[in-house]
Length: 486
Image (cartoon, rainbow, N blue to C red; front, top):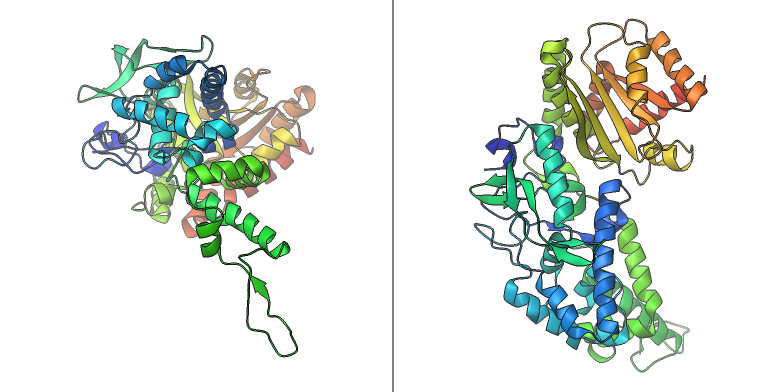
């Protein structure tokens, strides 16, 4: 049974930021360290910094000849079961780096040409150059290293969705980049059937097929050698039958010949090739990083019909009463709708403040994970700082005025940014609300855009008809322009 059903969240995978795992069995997804590096939002940055620190320290020890310290460092990469991600069948067992396997993989690393040639630069490079290492093992290494980050993420998601946790649970080791050592702690954690569970953002998992040895060997290494071979008229060049008027037919080289005689599909051979031609590997990494993107909702759960879900959310929104009594239901619904609409642009929602002041106000902050589009342009081109997106939900049956705008603007800081969305049911005087937003922008360069029920309904209706379209981008462009250009 999935997390959403165990705790009766009444949400589908598309409405949740985390992978909706079943604690009784693994799902064949992997935490993707390259995807973490390619992402540019706050949580991914923290994870990437932790991974980079561990890996650079590991390489430093190897380069300094401190092999035993490096071996000890590696020994903590034990078999994690908390995420329920990987390749196991049945109850999660963790087919990644087991206690015994950690030693075996360390020996494989030390025996590989990758160490001698110096081609290792990132954790995921193990997949390309070290025998016996695939996406499952790199995923499990990553889990161990960023365990503390995942604990904090799990805590924020449990708080957001009202999932109960237990205090004082002893953790498995996690990497402390400040002290550069493995540490354990006692934390408030999600526990199911007496086992601690770690939730993982769906924006940071993949099926492990993009950054792959076979892809690098076949499409980059052999293509490079093929071009060189033809240019130099090497020994493996063949000629097609000459056409009429030709003395010699067109030259060609088969990848089969190159893989047999020049660069076999062997990680040590490929490591030596990469040391001689580092740009080929750089091109491969740049290509895969540039094309790395989170799985969409249909890839995460093929059983969910996005059109039906959009129709359901529209009806639920329409049927949700206005007023303080239903503020909690409205806020929960809005988080799910925003997750569906804006994935993967918005990530890692966090409940900032929960105040029962008669309106049951809940403030939400999303990481701005945009790598293109309006929220990317807003930050990079229009120079409106927005590493986080502040969300204020108002289930009011009355007019939205300056106090509500000031309340949201009061959350803006240098580190958080100066952009937020004010979610409200409807307004009596839309022009007056926009004018108030314009005044705030002109006076303080703080940008707030209102998002009404009608806006959400329109976006969801378009999504229902064409799930791959991005109507939210058109909405953001129009609403931001409306406020910024008086």
